[in-house]
Length: 115
Image (cartoon, rainbow, N blue to C red; front, side):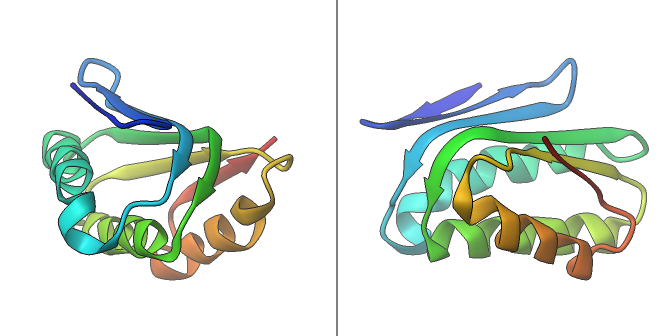
């Protein structure tokens, strides 16, 4: 499954329970993020009792609406309580340093790797 726009791509590999993000996500509000939100929400639902990985290393930019979407999903994963969340980022992408670090505040068990 994947959602592709002019300058971004978000794909989900159901077998490995991994979402891979790339490009620049500058969508306007929750309505435009709805297809991505639904796809990631479905990934969380199928990941209960196992691992779920978000690979954000190739996502060069994510606006505040997109960051809020990811935070909402991390909070859902925490509420479900039986998902091992792993988020992979890049130290070479400026926005990821602050924003990804905050995810651990929403879900203390989240495993964050920034290479």
